Image (cartoon, rainbow, N blue to C red; front, side, top):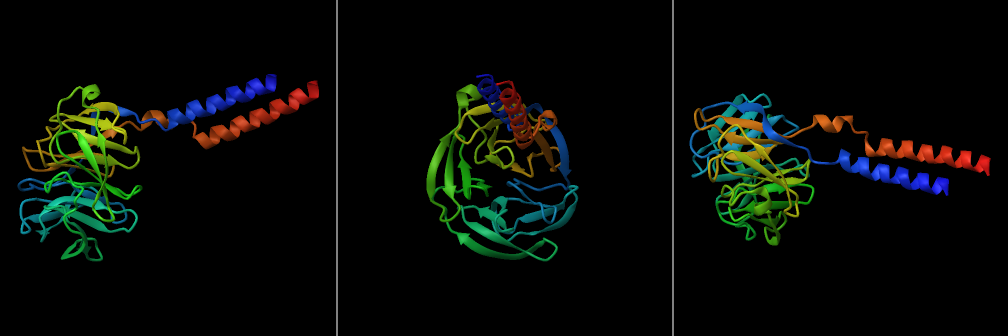
Length: 287
């Protein structure tokens, strides 16, 4: 009986601490991280980060002749050139290593790059006019684990769009009321692959939601997120275009520190199993 009780207690401990280790911890005030430099013109669209080349990619939307920009990992501009497509959102595809671009009218393209990762002016079309997008202006964000896009208008309903054929797979209704807000900025929704959550913004607040739409928390951001474009989410950071100088400012919405003190679930499980084994031997000797 004693052994059975100990087994139950240790199993419960594993489940409890494992849940804590995997919990999303949100900064009440977002931490400033980096500036993507340069006096960026006009309405900047959602950017992407390539972790292999350590490069960020962004572009001004509105016409194919408008410029695209490449930054190094420190935020310095390494290329500015006419993009050749009317950008709405860059996405880095971890499954293929391709840089993809969602355009006005919701086409999805592979962006041609040279050996250094810079734009070479070519594109390969993957999809035309994705039917699942909420609008032709939507800045679709990509979840490479599920191989889907997320697309949102300010109604708070997020469309889940197939990366394979652009069709609507379903939708997610974000919990506005619990978040304490009435509407979000048009066109933008972010996805964090580490936390597996969605991010939406109002003027000075980022709201974080589970993939079922349930509200997790708010984080106050240091820049005003303008309605519509001028923002993006990549490399674990929310980027907001600073209207005073045109740069993109990055913000970390999630706290990493507190989770470091929690044992890994696998380590805890090994420890617990060892304790169960020792207890079992002791009780057998006593019987």
